[in-house]
Length: 402
Image (tube, rainbow, N blue to C red; front, side):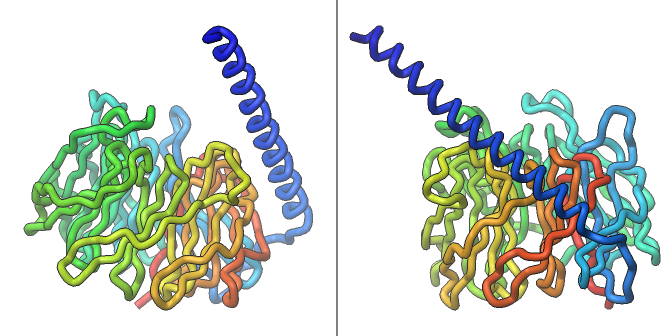
């Protein structure tokens, strides 16, 4: 009987895997067909006075050292053009642009999950033409750094080390030169999923409450730290998520005391509201894919418009799409739909400062896709493609000029 059940399980598993692979192949074929149609129909890029400017981070091939790209976008047509590429070191996979547009920081995502080799954080000065000059780099104090951000005053920089399961903090001077790490905190523990055999710090930011929030994909926790000067302080305070969630990134509502956590492994968004005592209470949980889809999801990025009306999350895996939500006055989400990313593996995307355009980086299609945001329902429309970037994985808009 056990043998028969084992054979049945293998057969059922093969059927299920075959069905998933078939759906994935069909989805990939549809994406390629839509890419070809758009590229045939779209015209040549023409600059305008209202153009938006972006920096794109990427994974670099062996021997390639220019991994940060400056891209210009015409917001009326959605068309984009690469203007320049800059010496960046290996794998500048995530970027942070200072709000004065004078400094840029990038993680160099090298090193391994066993933390035997540390990654780097690099700093750059930006000139009046938005061109970058590398200043210096420092050890990330952990393997595979994957996220970088500022504190709210933008006087310090933080790095999350996925492989090292740790976070580090840095100061920088007026010339953009980074200090050595001012603090480094390592986590412990694991989760039930095969990708949770150890801590994996995937995201770090400072909340409106002034707490430093760290998404730990490996232990299903959001660690909450205090910042003392340039140093992160150890803490036992955290937000716990359901086992196997795999929190990857989060966004904060612009006005309400709510955070939205995107879970890579479970394919969900879980919102938490901070109560009067400072504790975070779970508010709601939504899937990032339609109910009838059972494929591998692999959520990646989550963003909210600056007016708090619409929220977006990207799914990689077998679907490669953007989930679209409206946000009501209480912070609750309503699914508006899903839009193909028109590329494979949408690892990151960004919303323009005026909330009019969303640009997605499709890692395994080597393209950027811009969409106009419908201001009535948040749907993504009028796509345009830039297809000459290798492994783009981060999109950052320059801030509006002061």
